[in-house]
Image (tube, rainbow, N blue to C red; front, side, top):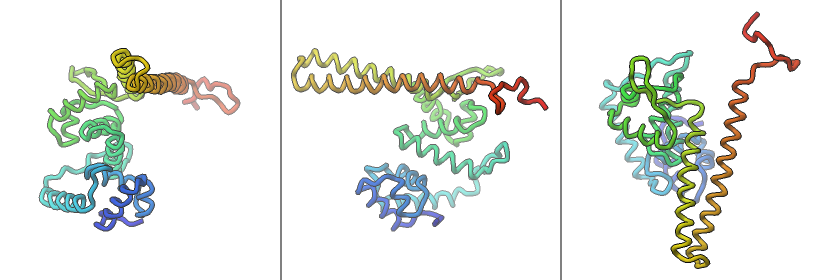
Length: 254
């Protein structure tokens, strides 16, 4: 598998693949590159609808030039616990951030959520986030406000009364519930329009179909999320069993 930076010819192939409606995985397969490389390349340079090979190549050269100029001041990858490779962790964090961006989340919000998710504690202060991401506290504050509105982070005070931002095993459930509440508002609004536009008119029928479709999908997702939460919570609290199916009263003992 080839390594190093993408060539201008490879970027042209990416642009052609996007124009043909190919998935990132298929474009990556044709280039013999990781899917994450193609995804990151496209999201860094305008997204799938605005990607231009020549502009992407020029932007990459400019970024490389700036990195060379600021290399002496670039912070080293922070030390990692559990014997992890710091560079591998940093590369994975970038990949995880890119995937969040591809799902529609803004860049800074994606960076903050990825940073929090990949810490063992699952929590950081605003100053810790700003230091890790090399961004301003104002950028962190704006990102946290967005993530909190989506149910993806929560705030708590530590023993030193510092405000910490937390992600835990429940964040995706809470995020789905927040999304369900927003969807319910869309359903209500669509149905209000039916009365205003007149039941049976083409526009009203369209709104009613939107309301029915969105309500059905939202209810299905909500039920699935609640079931998954119950199952996963039960699995997490079920004590380990022996091979005979008998609970071991002292799984950590001799």
